[in-house]
Image 1: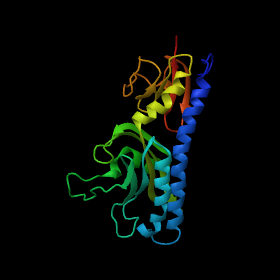
Image 2: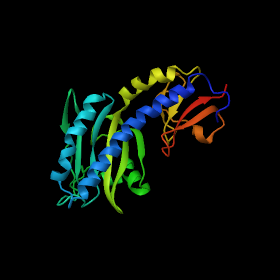
Image 3: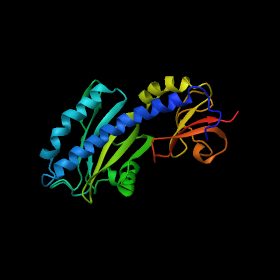
Length: 235
């Protein structure tokens, strides 16, 4: 619905889209690098390792980004039933994330059943999941985006990235405040990500999704296929 949209709405929408397009664009590049490596023979860490510098550069140039990396489908990386090549922040430094992939251990990090991985694997499309607390991974309140990595018809895994929600809110709030009305950014699960109004607190869940409701006078999808929306309520 777009009739009577408030001043600043289109500008705010464009700013949000630019942020996510930049984040997803990085993941598409990473997916292409891994697919190219798979085209040169069996996928090994030695073939994946050259993307390290790019991952670290992305983290260094964007404070909203908390982590980036490749998460492999089972058995795709030679000799590795599970495999993750992921770098994240530790204060002002960056480190490779090391997790427990022992499926017989109660504390296993079973990424195969996590929404960000399973969603990208099942739909073979891009996924933006969260906000959520990654208790056993980053330990942070994040948004996780995933882009499927394929070579021919083979699904190799996902290129993923975490955005730290607290920093994302600070980045987006000035944009939403430029809208001449109350405005809220909502994810696919009706969860509030950020708003310019005290009516909604990040983490709140709306009764109905703006894309499926007449409670909102102006609604626009954010990130095609993600189920996210920027919305302004009816007066």
